[in-house]
Amino acid sequence: MSSVGDIQQRDTALAALEAAIDALSGEDLSRFGDAEFAARVQGLEACRRRLETVGHRHVVEINDRRLWTASGSVGLYRYLVETLRLAKADAVARVQAAAQLGVMTSAYGEKCEPRLPYTAAAQAEGVISGDHARAVMRVMDRLPDAIDTEHRAVAEEHLAAAARVGTPEMVGKVGDRILGYLDPDGTLTTDKDRARLRAATFGEQRLDGMSRFEGCFDPELRAKFDTVFAKWARPGMCMPDDPDSPQLGVHDPEGFDPVRLAAAVERDTRTPAQRRHDALKAFLDASGPERLGTHRGLPVSIVLTMSVADLMRGAGVARTATGTTVPVRQAWRMAEGSIPLLMIFDETRGKPLYLGEGARIASQWQRLAAIARDRGCTHPDCSAPATMCAMHHLIPWAAQGPTDIDNLTLVCDAHHAQITADPDDARGWAAYRVPPGTEDAGRTAFCPPASVDPRRRARVNRFHHPEQVLAASVQRRRARLLTHRSRDIHHSRESRHPLE
Image (cartoon, rainbow, N blue to C red; front, side):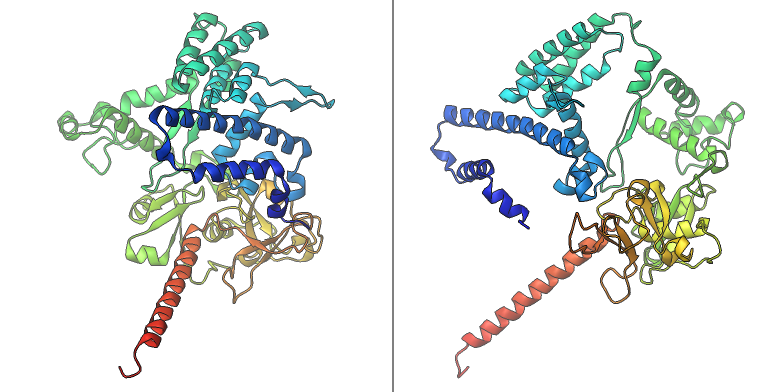
C-alpha cells in the first residue's frame, strides 16, 4: 500500500506548488525595490486567498466521497480534525465556508452554484480573504427569513462589492446599513429568526485560567440578566472575599445595614463589567444543585479532581468534568461549599476505587473515579469532556464483564456506537485496558478497524493528559542532552595528548 508521502510525490500539481514555495522561500528579497516588493506581497496574498477556494473544493469532495466512513471518524468535521490535525474552530469554519462558497453536489448528482456566488467569485479571484467571506456570511445569516430571494441576492452582491474594496470590519458596517434598509423598524424579524441567532459560546481556556465568553441573547434571557444585574451588580454587592458585602442567597439588600452597605460601596473598586461577572457567579452559586437535576448519573454539580501531590503542595490545578482547570487553592475553597464534588486522585496508582460487580449501571462514585482517571473520552484524539461521555464496559456486560472501575472507561456517544461487542471483529473499534509494565499502563487503548489500519495497532488518547505528553518530551530532551554530553566527553578524552 502506498504511503501518503509517496502519493503526494506523484501528484504533479502538488509538486509544482511545493517547488514554487521552495523558490519563494529561498529568494533574496533585498534585490527587490520597494514598489516591486509591495507588488510581490500583494500577489502572494492573492495566491493564498485563491488556495482557500481550492480548499472548499476538497472539503466538498471529502463530503461527497464520505471519506470518514473508511477512516473511522464521526462525520466530516471530525475527519478534518483528526486527519489534518486542525483546531475545532478551524474545522468548523472550513466546513461552513465550503457549504456557502463551494460548488455542492445535489442528491441527483448535479453540480449546484455556490449559495453566495458573488462572494465565491471574489475569493476565487484572490481579491478577498477568508475573513472577508466570513463577514459576508455573518451578515447574510442575520437577514430575517421574510426577506425574499431577490433581495437576498442583491444584498450579497453589495456585501461582496464592499469586501473587494474594504476590510472585513467594513463589510459588517455595510451589512448593518443593508439590514437597516431591508427591515427599518424590525417588523420582519420574528421569534424564529431570533431563535436561529441565539448563541452562548466559551472560548478556549487561556494559560492564566481565564476564558472569553461570546453570546447573542434573545430578549427574554436579556431581560432576566438585566433583572439580576440591576440588583446584584450594583457597587458594593457580591464582592468576593468581603464578608461585609451583601451576598446573593445570604442577604437581602433591602434590609441590609445601610452603614455597612455604604462602607462596602466605598471599598468597591471594581468596574461595571467586573461587578456583572461577580453577580452572575453569585447567582449560579445561590441556585444550588438540588434544582438542576442529574446528568449521566451525577448531580448537576462541579466535579473537581486534584492529585494528592498537588493538594499537599498547595499548588498546581484541579480539573472539572468539563475539562476546565482551576487553581488548587481556589478549588479547595470551592469544595468547602455545597455545589462541587471533590475527588482526590492518586496519579501514581491510577486506580481510585473498586465498587462491586452486581449492577450493570455504574454507580455515582464509579463515574467520579472514571472522571478522575480518564478526564474525557478515551477514544483516540477525541476532545469530548467527561460530561459528554457514557460509561463503557471494556468486557461487555453480556459477556460477564464486571461493573468495576478497571472494566469501565469514558467514551462519548458518537465513538461509543463504533465499538464492536467482539474485539476480534475487524469491522469496528475494539477497546481494552493497557496492562502493567508499559508507558500507558492503566489507560484505555483502542484498536482501529482494518479499513483504517490493516495491522490494527493500538492507539491511546493523550488529548486529556497534556502533562504526560510534556513529561515524555522532557525525558527525550534530557536523554538527548545526556547523549550529546557523553559524546563530547568521549571526544575530549580522545583528543588529549597521550602524555597529558
